[in-house]
Image (tube, rainbow, N blue to C red; front, side, top):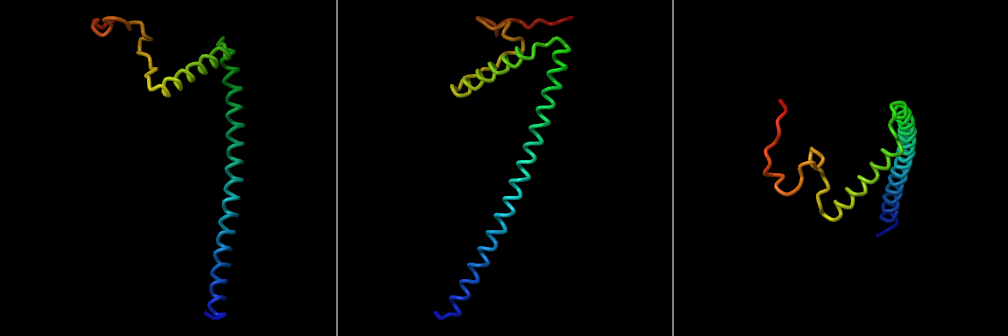
Length: 110
């Protein structure tokens, strides 16, 4: 193989390097755009949280208690999922759960 073959290979390598460089710059630009989007979404979520807390307090809802309860439920759900158990509750909140609960006749409101 002579110098012509080497030059051809070098041209191919240079072209590949240019393609990689261009793709890297595209990825860098996409990363900047994603970062900006995430920051914008974070700001919007924070604004919404502040508004929601203000409305909740205006309605007499204890925001901290609601958040604590949600955290507990989320942790219990995660524990149940990792243990492979069902943590869901019945529609009546478990009021009819217990021995013979499935045998009981459902009540009908007139």
